[in-house]
Length: 437
Image (cartoon, rainbow, N blue to C red; front, side, top):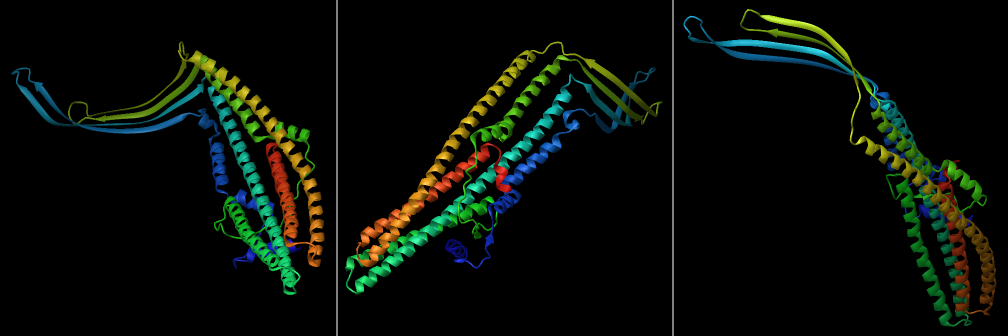
């Protein structure tokens, strides 16, 4: 209860701005909606969706409409048959007008169109995986910073408790000094300890503020200094994660692995596009046009025509010097993608196993550190009673107090490191969405 009150007052200590109480789930939901990187990734996904069409693959015909008008002024020179004199005629003004519609359609090109369409659909799926990867990374970043903020607030609460203990020690030292039981040195040492603990508390408020600024940045809040009231006052670590289950989920759901598998499929489709050049191609063309000519001189004053033409073209590439080289390179690319996929599987298993070992170690350390904290707390309570009776010096009490503070810090550090290990394990295994439930 004391910790909750302290953290609530901290959020209101320096500002009258209303404080937003946000749980981890609320922070994540806000970030997914407002984060700039997420908005960019979603736009890229929409672009990939718009590109995944048969028209973009080249399956549909192209139709062009054209119109041309060509006026001309001509000068004629002729020689008369009888006299042989040269006669020049000026002002011959002619007009030419043409308009038409042309259609071109590739009906078959060795399955290249179908393969291109499959690639566009695969690129659309890859963009969805990219969006998922961005979501998972953002959720992991939010969760890590959220629990860092919880850690900093707990540390602030611990510093406040230490400061209150020092204040009590100072009160007892002053009381005993006034009645002559303690020397002036004990009193001055108690004052110095209280001032040092007060300074540590003030410095820790800056660490809390920095963490909240980072959270506001991840959530794309316009006011980075807007105070947040974090309702969690403890770091609760899951202890039910099992390595075999995590490994199974990783091989099935890891985003990076799914993306690499799609890269292998893309390499195979590139190879099929090269093979399509070994097939003949079939193209359809048609044109419907109108032509008109108007002459300023001569016996023929105008002429016009209206015509339709069409045709089918069948072709086959007899020789392509690069085709064989590109086919071999495409086969090597497929092999390389398979090698990269196998390496990624191994790397993910190694990373997961290493992180899991750290996770189990941190949980074991956390259990030991909590027991150590209980002992340190009992030692301090006993030492404080002896100090009140004058059976313990201020220096000895300070040492016991520092042992208690160290035990609190070790528990807090073990909790946070175990939580970070938990977040990393869920991120690798593709289960990071657990924090949205």
